[in-house]
Amino acid sequence: MSIEARDIVKTFGTFEALRKVSLTVPTGTLVGLLGPSGSGKTTLLRIIAGLDTADAGTVHFEGQDATEVHARHRRVGFVFQHYALFRHMTVFENVAFGLRVKPRAERPSRDEIRDRVHSLLKLVQLDIHGDRYPSQLSGGQRQRVALARALAVQPKVLLLDEPFGALDAKVRKELRRWLRHLHDDIRVTSVFVTHDVEEALEVSDFVAVMNNGEIQQFGAPADVCRAPANAFVADFIGSEQRHEAPAA
Amino acid sequence: MSAPTHTLRPRHAPRRLSTTEPAVVRWALTATALLFLGLVLLVPLAAVFYEAFRKGLGPYWTALTSSDALSAIRLTLLTAAIAVVCNVVFGLAAAWAIAKFEFRGKQLLTTLVDLPFAVSPVVSGLIYVLMFGAQGWFGPWLQAHNIKIIFAVPGIVLATVFVTFPFVARELIPLMQAQGTDEEESATVLGASGWQMFWRVTLPNIKWGLLYGVILCNARAMGEFGAVSVVSGHIRGQTNTLPLHVEILYNEYNFAGAFAVASLLATLALVTLVAKNLVEWRAHRPARAAATPTPEIPHEH
Image 1: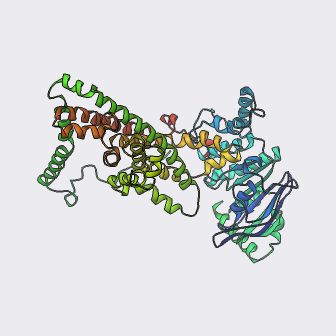
Image 2 (image 1 turned 30 degrees about the horizontal axis):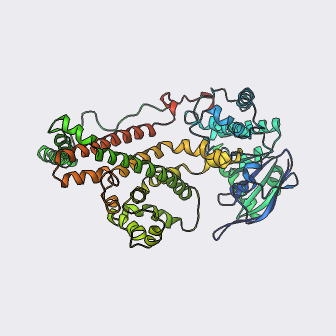
Image 3 (image 1 turned 180 degrees about the horizontal axis):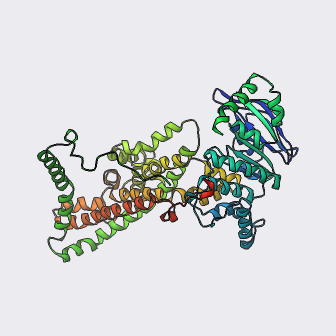
């Protein structure tokens, strides 16, 4: 399921968050939205999900206009920066949520829900009991639960907002490799937001480098590294890499 | 896990004189505080019960079971029930709007929620007399249609609802603001409808705050005197609430009766305090199973 955002404009008061941004995510790819904070990447992601409304522009899924479709019906999986797990529910209930709120006709039976949740927990390699609460989990475990929850409704596209932002460096590295492998397995069209150059270059099929509410360059990581489109991209990727290298 | 914590202070450090006062001063301050507490809070509370039971259990029971007292109890319970239900609905709606959305006039709405706290209860009552009384704006129309609001139960309910309006909303606004909208957005993206989101995500997250607000709202609704006094008309057996009944009995020099009824209100206050503390204690405990500490999974760290 491809994603196409066309000429998206979004302003908050006088601040122009997105200035006629267009982005095409080919079916089955993993695209990284990379840029410094305030560059509009999260806003773009939220507009694709339907959590924010664009002032102008359209969002198409597989060629179909979804601009007016409510977030509830877009069938996107969204992983929030701070996971946004339901704190009063167990891990099992968190993952089952999307299945339980389906209209009666589409809702799986109890047994099916149980099997689906367990296979999802296995898929995200979470070998803990489903009766734990989010507050009892480590950051990395929460991230996996959030991912399992998003995948439970079999989304057409998967959107991840700074998925590793709140984790420490080691877990971060581990988890992003794991995400890459998971994506190779399930092949759901995915977009993730990050400000970490190394992360974007390592994980993505394509990166979109953003600054000041515009996409500066879109391309495969190798191409962006080899031929930066402008001074900003060259500087952002270059300096970040130099900066990140010793820490890695 | 983290290394054992060391305190930097030497084990037998002498008491630091620079931050402490001489014993005399410390004792004097503590004694003053306790004396004040006793005089202002404990003695009056004890006095209520002492006076109530001074003539024995018989008169106490008679005072509470007289038909006027029973009707006052009924009216108070009815008023409180209506006020609590109304203000749970209003409070939830107002807190939801203020905490989760940005809109024009939000500041004004926030201020308006607090209005009943700022206005003297007497004025709160007078507003309704001005609007619905015989000489009020809608008075002639109401009379023509034979609807009684002032000096009748509807006026008492209106005044009580007004006075207790802020309790639920004020309890919920900071709580809902702190929780943000992430979980609601998650629920929406996962396909939940507005109602499903509210019942399954929002309400469970605010239930203790809501209960706390309900307890305070209820206590105030049962105890409200000023506003209700203005709109009630003090008709025994009809428009008398418990606080008004206490006043009537007292003015008739029926001290035993007055204190007997007052002891009911004092008991309500004590029950409220206990309930409030229970809720606070429960609300500040993290999620149910938090008794077992988080084991760190080694391979992840």
